[in-house]
Length: 286
Image (cartoon, rainbow, N blue to C red; front, side, top):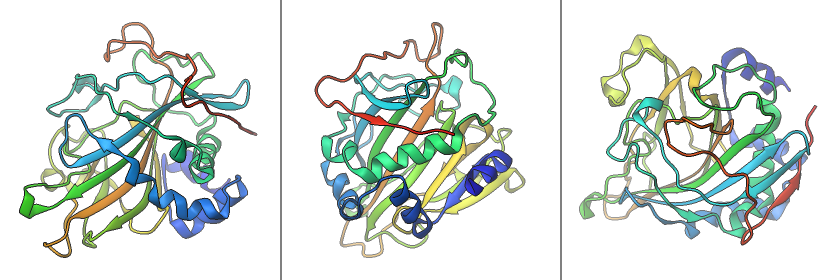
């Protein structure tokens, strides 16, 4: 609840992994799943528009009325320039490999979803256009993403190739799962004022518009922020040993209200449950 109070005041929180472990354990994470969750990124599949990243993806319905989180059918994922996401694939519907049971069935992953729901419950946020804020329901989109860098092979890993951006979300959470051969100066996250120019790289930004700086370095280091209250950027992934590839494994969890007719992505969220990889877990809220 102290973290929730900080989130209410600052609109973002950064929690070190060592502090997350007892929180997640209290929310039901089993001891053996802490080691297993560090291996789930091995199951990621090719990204359709980025050659340096592999991904799995799942959609979930957070329903405070029934106090449950349920897996939804897969839909294409689209972000647009109008949502402050300026990249070569802006506006293009993307389809990713679906989240496997080993990912969504891991109790650490489930506890992370519960943690996020507890923190953002009833937090005032700036609204986005054509999202249904009259509904109690939330749509949660969870990515497991592995970023690769191997310069001698021409692979340059960019956790945020789009530069300064937003993610079309209401609440965003990023969780560090692990890395290999990644340099200590890699993947620094900057929080920018919304006045910053969308699409420019971190090095081009105005220092006076930086509102925060964090770096995920240890297992379960967790950043959570109100997506529409800031823009953000992430620096590159670099290698320690140029002869070996570098990897960075993350869970990225976007949560927002459901899309209405007229949303810039061009489609409305389906609440149809997933038949092939179902999940229904109880949720307790204050």
